[in-house]
Image (cartoon, rainbow over all chains, first blue to last red; front, side, top):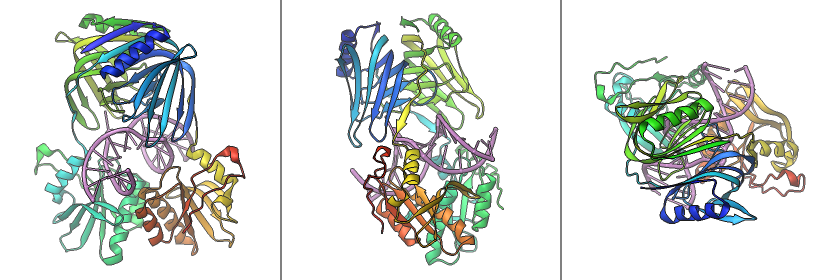
Length: 250
Length: 250
DNA sequence: GTCTTTATCTCGCAT
DNA sequence: ATGCGAGGTAAAGAC
């Protein structure tokens, strides 16, 4: 770990500190009054204002205004960030190719700069994801319907991937689409796409959208198209087999 | 503008500076070795490592590792961030309701802290967006097809919004879905949903997906379902009327 | 590389 | 508030 803080560096000091950060693979944080230009998939301009700029060793570049979760301008990792003095001002430039794009921050006044050579080997561990919901269903297909048997998980078709391909107690094939969050019209669309495909070759196919909830419009769309909704909101893997799944078939 | 930098503050100094930042509506940036816990829509844990933490006056909270565009943990604005000392360590806690969730960063060692009372009245101005593509098409419907006439823009239906409702030279209705980026299967789905709806009441309806490009799978899906693809990659408003649109109908 | 899908998506806009 | 769709979506996984 190395940390260096500068207060109100002049453009030359700014660029020197920034270059040191890039050379050493350190993270750079800047508090400044600046203008920002973006040129790439679209183009845009952000007028003068006070912001925080962050540059990471992988080429990530972020411009954060005082509010909002998302950076107002950014560059994903994969490219590179450079610093220079231009017309008496410090300038940070982030670039990448594929797609070719650039973000340039022209720094009118820098209030603070921090160089932080950070080491972080930890990876984030998460639970409650859609992947876990899939596992839970694969191991407890009865929570969707008594007698349902999973035939295949993540089956590829010519129109995309089906979450589960199953067969019900009567031997009728069932296409299952699973969502961790409230179902939207786009999720209905996906299921409808897969079911239409199977209907080309198979007379009897059921389509099942599994999600914790769905808006009325989505439920109507499902109903109108002969598809089913199954409410499944709990899928704790720790309660394997004992969990009472909420079933709201209609 | 007010800026204060602290180097290696102890937990008490950390909390005092953080509280000053929250009270004054300032942005807070911290370089530290910490652990992070998230509890909310999912739950997760990030083990010890060196990161940058950012807290904004609107309740936004970000945890940035040395790589990657996205924060490894975060809280969107709308809630609040607080600081306290717990078991001899500084702790930052971001909370919100609807949905109820919390991110807690337990700071084992703080290397640097910056309080930045920033003023930023600028808003980002962007061009090349889908809205501009819509304007361009509304003013130049011929780039989609000779003789096409736009009847309605953003028409609401019981299954969602149609980008354009138009009529071709023969008087046949055309449902048009416009995408600024390469068309995906979900975009095909959307168009298919709208067209199916119109087919309930109308025998002859055409469906047209307008985008700069589309994968073969998407083109096949369109073809198999009697829908059309129109390639439109340039839509500069400055070249009104003179632009040669690339047409790749099939 | 390209394609497909998820996401603690966020955000804006409309009802 | 909820619902719906866009996004410079980014990131992951498969091929």
